[in-house]
Length: 99
Image (cartoon, rainbow, N blue to C red; front, side, top):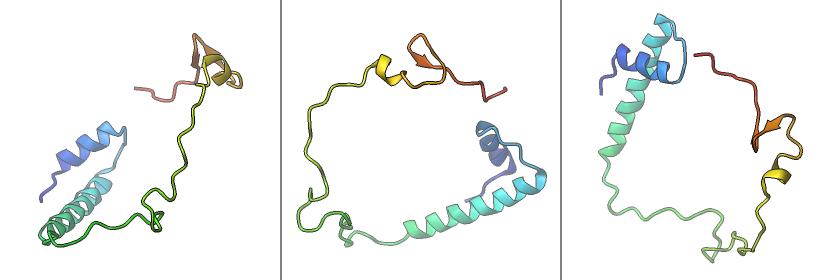
């Protein structure tokens, strides 16, 4: 599958990343390699392959799970009790995105 520089720049912009021309070129090559590998894997016939077992399951499918228990929700006041700064029922945090 062919990836263009324009597509890489678009994805980088969505992720708010500033990539140099060299980095864009490298990302084009690496993304193409990844997608080519996925295409190669998709060619395999897996119709006769059994689903893998969950490693936590020993003999019983729910061996690693706990019983459901009733609980009381934490609530806004208790949830914000240790917040360094809060207001209107929410955590207040410094702005981190300058766009």
